[in-house]
Image 1 (cartoon, rainbow, N blue to C red):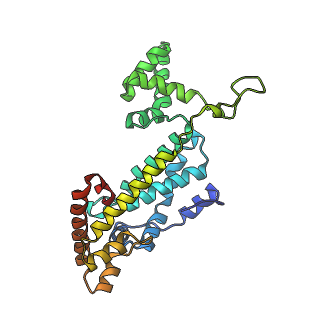
Image 2 (image 1 turned 90 degrees about the vertical axis):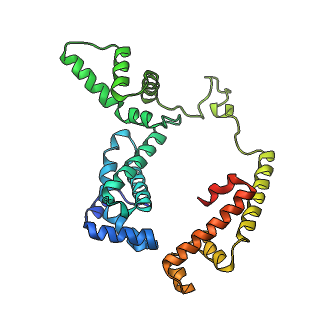
Image 3 (image 1 turned 45 degrees about the vertical axis):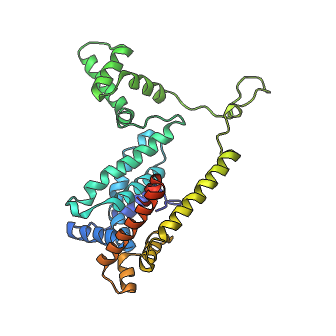
Length: 292
């Protein structure tokens, strides 16, 4: 879902006009997408909850990212939620989607805050989004008691409040207060000074690595061809149509073509993957993750 050419206000107005789904309709749409990959159902589900995504994106404007970019990331989180949502668990989609939307926006904000990775663990992420708020509250409370906290005391109290090591607070404080410098900046005031970007090592693949990668790909292709050869014609057809097409077919469409029920096609697909898994495991267990 792209938003190029649309401003945040326009998107918000459009989202507010979307339908409100009741629990029963929401469940039907979720089943249609999960079981039949019904794109119309997915579009309806996503459209209905774009107002939720936009509302959450607005809460992160203070980090300086363009609102359109925040909405884009929120929509990606919403689509991930729709793809992974299990309607059998009895949870409303909006409740489930909140976590995916928030995670997507937070990852975007942290990626774009600095070229230096700001943090990757859950505790570092919590520190990034809560440090300033906690610090302001602690300073207010200290001022109310007539106290003045020095930097070390404040850092220790923040670490205790957020539940992270003191060194994480010190690291995050430096990254939140600093800003990135251009890699095209000169290393010296001399006009002939080289730029910082010239000091970065070229990490692109070298000739030897490319040859090795090509060899590995060829070997993997051979293993997969051999594994496919263990299947009968019908199993091979199902695997190709379900996993090797740019636009994978649904269980229902394959069932209609083969004269089978959707559940029977699912069973045949599972059996085919079981055979392939055994074949691959016999040749090289580490390639099994390609079938996950």
